[in-house]
Image (cartoon, rainbow, N blue to C red; front, side, top):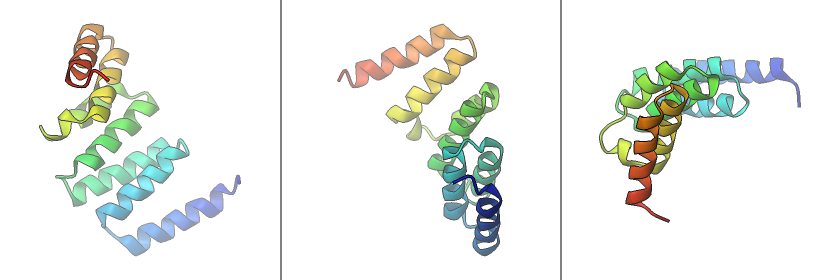
Length: 122
């Protein structure tokens, strides 16, 4: 509703109450990214990743926020930190293909998309 100051105050309260809880930090990051507040979202995802460095969801969300902000190399770096199992996920592969496409590596992007289609042709 355009009440950004109120929203920022509420997020600051959540940050204060949650401390280092990675789920809360990740959830706030998702909320912020949904409103195109990518710098703040990235900071929350980075905080969540510090609290739980094994969370593929947080790494994916961080990569996605960088991608949506137009920072493709940091997006690739974050995406490449996802575990081998997480790298098999369709959403991950779509993001990775998009990242390579925006980095100008259309051959790598095409390969990723073709591999994804072969795995799940529907």
